[in-house]
Length: 254
Image (tube, rainbow, N blue to C red; front, top):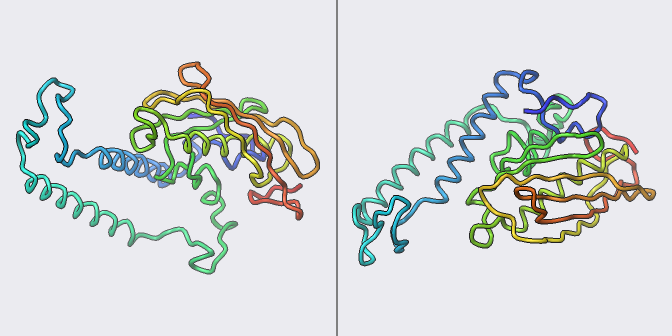
């Protein structure tokens, strides 16, 4: 875990914090989120038994003549339904607990009262530690450069054994979006150009780096690269546009 970003760093909204600075309840929530990610991965890879995949990893035949060698389709269906009932019960239990109010649903702006929950390090779909939809991505500041690590598993697959290009691009959008903060301001993504040099593999530590290039009025320019085992797999360049009002979330000014 990386140390907390300096309080005067405008990029802090994206960056990991030392868990020693978090409440016990927030740390426990992060643990729950990790388990939900595991559940998604395991559920995605459940074998329904209606296809012949040949030998298993241990060498034993999974299926024979198109028929399951052990449990019947009815048995497997019953097992899956039982698991679905358990998942439904857990979702119901969590749904009954207090939740973070949202302006678009509850009509209350709690961005100041619950400041930590509005930070991208908590809610981002890319590196949000409280967002179970986010892949395991970590980001930290190395001077003006933002670095990141990602580990993509089966649910993020595009071509067989490779990360879907959309996820590669989405991570660039997040890292460049954070790196632009070195300019002293933040803008919305205007253009994002991705060059995929080679396929990005699953189950491999993917390292990202991104930085601020220059600013032209309201336009902030940035760059990014990602690697798999030290081999360049993709590059990015982006232009972010600061709103005319000069502010974009996170309490940052023009």
